[in-house]
Image 1 (cartoon, one colour):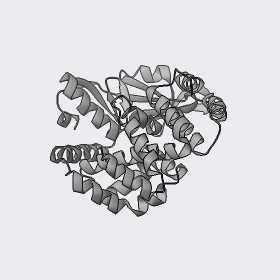
Image 2 (tube, helix red, strand yellow; image 1 turned 30 degrees about the vertical axis):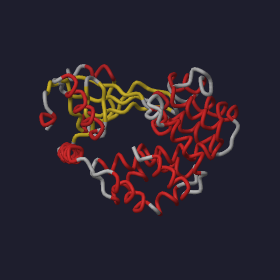
Image 3 (cartoon, one colour; image 1 turned 90 degrees about the vertical axis):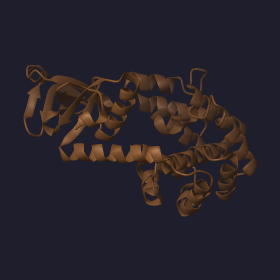
Image 4 (tube, one colour; image 1 turned 135 degrees about the horizontal axis):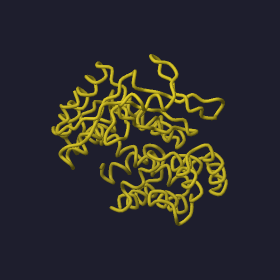
Length: 298
């Protein structure tokens, strides 16, 4: 992670009080909190709660709005919203709330800056150049990074000074050759899968996009040595049809048309299920096989 000196420099450059930024950095870099606070870019409710506070909204109003919004999502999301700003919050949200209570919206700006600077450094150490880092800031983490920067009023500061920020990071840390090599291998495998028409990878029964799936395969192979996977092609993706917001139990594939779940099950292939927003289901058909190396995916 970038040094506190670097964090403070860019906080002041972006108009944040240096002392507040320093205190927030110390709080976040506590070993119990450093990764936890990243919840603001990994969890929808935590993200929207942070944004609401950044906008100066009352915490009670933020919670009420998110509880209402969560009614359109699965039960775990609703539960998350109901527990918002209570002792049942996950550690990351407790830290975010503590920062807000101590330092207000300026403290939250410092927290967002901290997370973004860490993200930039992480990409640099993986071998990303400035152009690709700029692209990642715009679209990374499902565009949540850009959303947070905009709401925190930091987007101009970060984008206008990205070359200088990278210069500061480069001066303190060289990129990792191993991480760069791993990233190139990851890109090559994802590219090859895409060229072969792969739309998803099922890993241990759970479907992922090719890019995420390759990372998951690599992680699990390191832990287990051998795992079950399956490749899903265009003719193996079936999305449930709905009437309004109501599911019909009929699944559509652009090559095969409409079929029922029982008909799909009769084909003798493995089926992975993913439930999206509003409870809409997508089925992924695949042939399961066991692999011991990443290259065996191809």
